[in-house]
Amino acid sequence: MKKIVSLVGIVVVSWFLVNNPLADTYVSTLQEKSVTVTANGSLYTTISEKAKEFEKAPIDAKLDPVWKAIPGLNGLKVDIDASYKNMKKEKKFNEQKLVFQQVKPEITLADLPPAPIYKGNPDKETVSFIINVAWGNEFLPDILATLKKHHVKASFFLEGRWVQKNPDLAKMIAEAGHEIGNHSYTHPDMSKISSSKIHEEIVKTNDVIEATTGEQVTLLAPPSGYFNNEVVKIADQQKLKTVIWSVDTIDWQKPSPDTLLNRVLAKIHNGALILMHPTEVTTNSLERLIIEIENKGYKIDTVSDMLSEERESYNTKK
Image 1 (cartoon, rainbow, N blue to C red):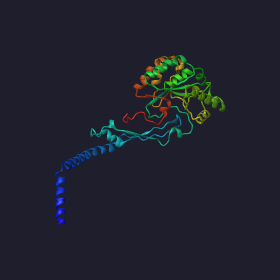
Image 2 (cartoon, one colour):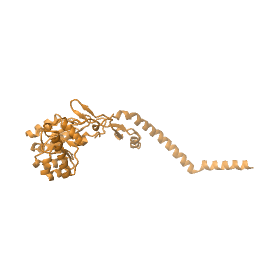
Image 3 (cartoon, one colour):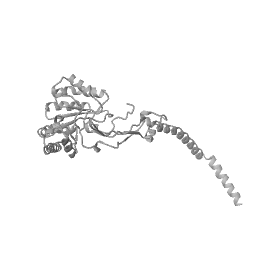
Image 4 (spheres, rainbow, N blue to C red):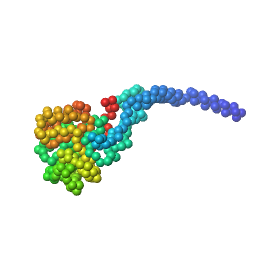
């Protein structure tokens, strides 16, 4: 009798499950999910297979026999899960919706021994304006206005004496979001002074810049580009990188704006450090220079950002 009751119970439960509308809905949902998983699984596989075409290996920083310290550059790796999430609604592969992760190089600029820097990584489509300031006050407001108009950040290297005499202008530069660097205190030929004097020129300038603007300095631009190994070593001890330049406007010679533009644009390159001063010709050329540089596909940023391993563009086809 118990066996008969159990059998009847099983039959009733089975009938209820088969004819229950909720069960129908559950089965349909499972079928739909199965179809979606199959279709999107193919998309996931496609992304996984194509990822290698778009990825780039990181580039280590190195010491070049000519250009000295060259920064490294992050690699690019496709984030397959995030890319799949970006594309699953369309259910088809779209390279514009790939999501990348940056991969750090094994050797960075910080890992290299102290050495001067003349330019950034040749694979990074970024350039920087180095604006050395020890005079030219009358042109600074217009230069700052042009930079602001075009949303460009530059690196201003300030002489210590100048900062003490012109604290308001120094603050104006810092408050505009530009990078502040060390350009010595008295503008000497740093290759011809003693180690103790080099130390004094650097430390005194760092102190007056920080006291005036609140900015901590990380870069040194020796006056006129004159330096020796002792300058680079002492700067490194003060946690400063020594930067020179790879493109010179020679604006102090008072060229015409066209001459200055041609001089820069003929030599522009990835990672260019472009030297200029607050002169009349630079003031009159700056807007055109920014437009022409950006039209060539370069981003203009501070020296520190340009020297970083961060990639500015994820356009791996460029």
